[in-house]
Length: 381
Ligand SMILES: [Mg+2]
Image (cartoon, rainbow, N blue to C red):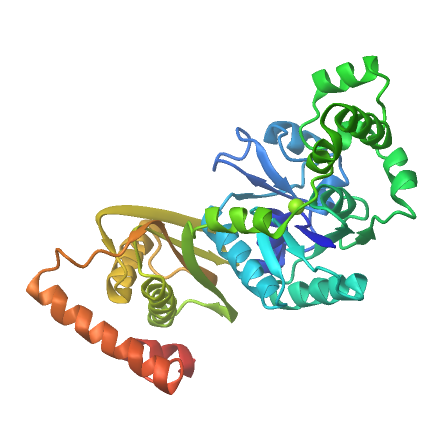
């Protein structure tokens, strides 16, 4: 069986999770900073209740709900959360792959109780990230994806031979991903109105013309090779870490210590994967400030935590505020390259030796046996 795990209103839910002021409020995430001249990238369920949804001009959204909250899209934060969810899912021991930034597929083979497993996954995701997921269960990825949409949000739906026909008959064909107005019209001419019509007609056509192979192709019957092929394509595109403080802080030294710690964690992950980055992204959010996120790209790739930290601080200067009140923050590195140490200067070679020594002590003695002095600040306040 395949579990299709689809995060509910992903970007909007993350924004609500990191900023308690947005919880329970109608919220849109816009693609650009100018709130009346952008497009809705994501809408919270509270905003969806007003008929607002992604793809809509923000101006129309504000007409539907003048009290709408607005934040600008912050890819670094979403990518980071998405990566952490994938790691969490892989912890279940089944092959798991990305379907998109907020959708994952897990091949649970013949696990005896996939519904219980799905429930556990939902609970663990909610406990860890304070966001919800809907999960579809079916014998192939296509149907599992469809099932994940049936009981949104925070729902579980299973499509099996007992309810497959009945369920597909209730789903209009336009609900399928990739079916727009034009395709819907063509389907109408062909007498295809529901997913069941499409399922039956396509299966019939493919079986008649291509035999069992064609039928398998349509049903999306996976093989482990299919999963593996997708896995290989999924090289990490970014590496990031973020943290939500227990309460907002205006102490710049404390905030910088956290940026240092997150930079250490990111640098360490890059080095473990033998990668270096050219782009560093820093985001900060707090109760009294608009969400801040900015990135800077350098010619020289790096995986040195200290360098990632100093690049992050340069980005922090761009906030234009002397000591902003911060509640949550994150450092993400992207624009990744295989680490190439061939052109290092003498000074850099010494530094690299030191970094390797620190990493190996931490690997042997446990994480954070040894760390930069500035990080100690994070432990005292
Ligand atoms: Mg989703």
